[in-house]
Length: 369
Ligand SMILES: NC(=O)c1ccc[n+]([C@@H]2O[C@H](COP(=O)([O-])OP(=O)(O)OC[C@H]3O[C@@H](n4cnc5c(N)ncnc54)[C@H](O)[C@@H]3O)[C@@H](O)[C@H]2O)c1
Ligand SMILES: [Zn+2]
Image (cartoon, rainbow, N blue to C red; front, top):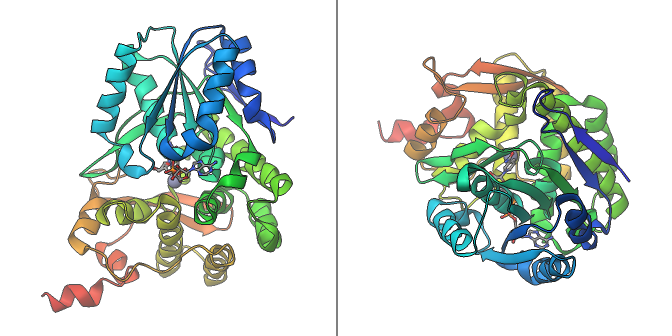
């Protein structure tokens, strides 16, 4: 079975294993009760995942001897918010949470981020296990320890680093994923390949026609490569002081599109548009050769991901979200831009006018003076 080790901290060992195997979801309760002992377990999931997997998962945990509470929140990005988080704290306290309790995030990236932040903060931190069920969460958000919630001022503005003690990935869970959610996950696959691994990028280009939810064997391989790439970045720079910034490729514009649009655009779609826009910016700045820019947009389109900015962007909200980006410093917003397929330049300043022009905002701005 593919196992990827994420090696962190020589002194206080926080390393963990990511296990990837079709069908592993049914075995996780037993594996967990063996690894973690029969502690109190809070399974956090959403309304869709409860129905598909959550109830059975909780029953298996109980059968394995754990004291289980299955806590469901409404599906969707709006649950990554402080009211939902507060509700979960209350349910944990009522459920008798202790320092040795375990939080399991069973669901997509929303659940991983929300349950992860809950685990990072309740009683100053309890253990966390990630069981990601969307492609996006399997290839990206479940590994690396970034957890958090959104704020009306912007995406992911409140958060922490809280590494899981284990990650279990079942590529068969993707069989029930809606088609557009599967595509959203592919956006993060393209991101990590474009940022770090040209041969993997070429491999996705070759396989694009065969990449489908149902192709479990191919999906397992893709997840394995993406997780290994992410793990290698996180190991070198857990707290994002340098190298880890490359994982923000497409995200400066992507996050601004998400928050300025009231989260109507899904994360994967937003970062696909963001990657295409940032590639055009890199081309305009003379950083990225035009054929590489075309390759990137070509692959996104082959995977049926959007590449053009939406027709309606709230310019004021969009530009202030760009300014609030976590990569901003006194000198302004810094972008991670592609230099070639497989290699990025982090920390590139981009003039506001070029951002507006790339997003088709120039004419609208001049109309209003
Ligand atoms: N922490 C990180 O490093 C990191 C990285 C990337 C993205 N993110 C975050 O992840 C979030 C997006 O994650 P997402 O795209 O997984 O969204 P999501 O969690 O909202 O899941 C998408 C939809 O799929 C449903 N679903 C989940 N698993 C399913 C399954 N197996 N079958 C059927 N339906 C299923 C969910 O109920 C939801 O409706 C964003 O908030 C983003 O900011 C975090
Ligand atoms: Zn992302």
